[in-house]
Amino acid sequence: MNFDFSDDLKLLREQARKFLRERCPSSAVRKILEGPEPYDKALWKEIAAMGWTGAAIPEAYGGAGLGHLGLCVLAEELGAALAPVPFSSSIYLASEAIMAGGSEAQKKAWLPKLASGEAIGTLAIAEGPGKADLRKLRTTFRGGVLSGEKLPVPDGDVADVAVVAAQGERGITLAIVDLHGPGVTREVVETIDPSRSHARIGFNGASAEPLGASGDGERLLRRVQDRAAVLFAFEQVGGAQRSLEMARDYALQRYAFGRPIGSFQAIKHKLADVYVATELARSNAYYGAWALGRDAPELPLAAAAARISASEAYFLAAKENIQVHGGMGYTWEFDCHLYYRRAKLLSLALGSTRVWKDRLITQLETANAPR
Image (tube, rainbow, N blue to C red):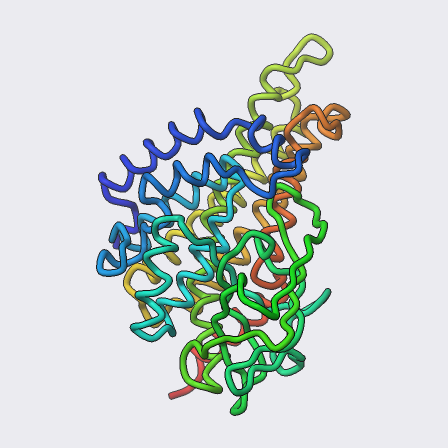
């Protein structure tokens, strides 16, 4: 079985890599990190103009129709560049949720805007620190009215539409809400990575529509999370690979005792460990891409494996990148901390690694249960 990408998708990868190297150097990331803007608006417009935001959205709804494999390729390059844009919130989460559970009217209303980058979307689940337990949600959705508070919401300060998990009349329900409507308040919150903004969103009797059937929210949410987990995994693999390359390049350039530090066994072992972890994560991500592209029954298992290995690989790569750089790696002037910040942020984007390990165990038990 061949899990590699086609020649067309490899060409897409090279084009995306070249574009991001020119338009998204670390100085562009630092500009958002240190400045008042929540994201790089000019970069976002260019990305949307190239059709990246509509990569996996069907052409009938204004998308490019490249499919999820094309989106995986783009996600890896965006992760390597640390692109400071609301791509994951709008495309991996909101768009996937609307495609999975939206009515025809909702798809026609929002997918073309999300595909063109005209609108930004997000998914609001958590209601504070710690594990997001759906059984303990305090946000309610009844009679078309949404009440409660969500925190933190990725790109919630700039999003135009949100898919919100809430307690409905028949259990957990997803609701779609226009964030510019009455009854919605927003407040920016600080995170470890200011280049990706987050917000506290309050709903005080906000008008909303159900996304999918009432009480079907948990099933829909799991489907969206499984699909997003694969896409986030590619973004994490891209960041891990770039961290490894940074560490390798520095180890070859930095001399100590008359020789490159990369010639010392301790540094070799660090780089080897990162390489092995990154390649394992890449393998799991490719398996996840195969399952996602085919909507295969193995997707929940593949998504959990990809999510876990990519989160662990990215954190290891970012941490060891700092260590290889030594004292300089801890300074603001070096870019090591940019990848460390993003690694930590993405590891919590869909729930912690522990949550996904529990999912993986459940999937393995189900797959191996006697029939």
